[in-house]
Length: 275
Length: 292
Image 1 (cartoon, rainbow over the protein chains, first blue to last red):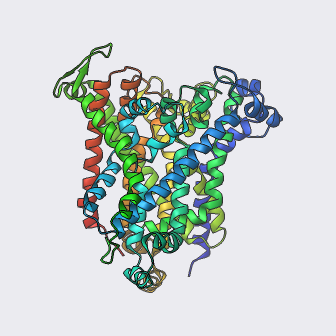
Image 2 (tube, rainbow over the protein chains, first blue to last red):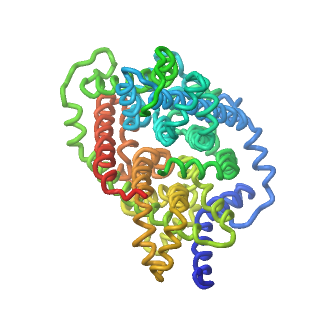
Image 3 (cartoon, each protein chain N blue to C red):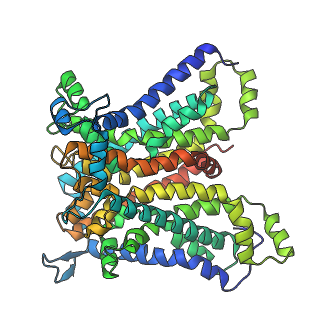
């Protein structure tokens, strides 16, 4: 059915697309293995150099920042706490909120629905200064809570979970009710296992979202102890070019690993939500 | 909402409480604050506030710099949505029909999705720096490219930087959409229509409409909000403010300029824009979309 000729063009387009995606990062990586002098005089490099371990060791272990006490590993630790915190707490709070909205008969259901979904209109970027003012009023600047909590005020995950719950047949709850299952048991034993794929997809989504935050950490952390990898990029390692090149490569490894290893779940979760 | 539901009294309130409390404190309180800022003027020392009606809005909307930034944002959103949407669709269609190496290609095209906008910006910086930049010298040889002085060159710079990783996002969603189309529909069409290009435009593309519209919204939100990290690490608005997106301008005015009244008014204008997009999505798109 599919001609050989068309398969060749398919491969060609895909290879070109792959090249477009790979080439910039490859050039940054290749350049990060040269010494500063080469980069400064000859520009970015396509081939590998000899200074890989030198350059990466200095980014990983050298102390930087204003206090000269911050290492890359510290920033990475903060970024991972922020990303895991945002992903885990978003999944938990959204699962529960969606469950309430879809499965319970309560008077305020409609108002809750609107209170929650209106948040889709107001991303953090739009309310950034008042959010900062409130976080500092609550004494949460330079804390993990301050980094994490304001980013949980979003209902995109609640929206996806409630869309998914609506596709679950009514008979499931009827049968469970006949068996005398209470609402907490129904949630834990029936809904959570059924939503597994969706949970993993949202987790990946929110992990990357959290890890990649830039503006919020800049505003809310004045102490270097809470700096994250992405915001630290502009501040700490811009001094030397090879340092910054190696920093770029190191900074993209965690989220890329997450996407590559969990992509099967990611795409499966999207298949549910696409409908 | 289900027909069969639980009737518990206390449980639902406990379940919804965590999200509701977070939203009230970190969303509704800031929004309230934004409105207070937008309608008041603060003296430079922050001692007193006066209610000034729409003065802040008037100042913002009559500022030529704001209108420039408005224009740029619209163009930016349009170009990014169009470029990344069509490239993502093209690649997804190929990846869906390739026989050998499907998963390798998929991995190759998906991973840039994970890279932070700010990192994309820093990376783009290397390719567009006057001293080191490969693309800078390439374009410079062609037509004297210089983004620090020429507005359209600066546009090209931030558009390339802004589009790159978003191609992956479009690819992922389009591929998921294509895999969602029932095999039997495709097989039936193979008998009816020999031309694969015609088959695509008359059958596959209409069936992809829900995905397409979903992606349009995703791309608009991305170009509008998430590109802040890109602008802040590439042109910073160069040549002279022409490449500031509305979000970036509000941030600079509020943070560097400490003009909270203006930043508040700008935030409310942005909320209205998002509201219009959302209404458009629900009213217009939901009706026109061809669901399978």
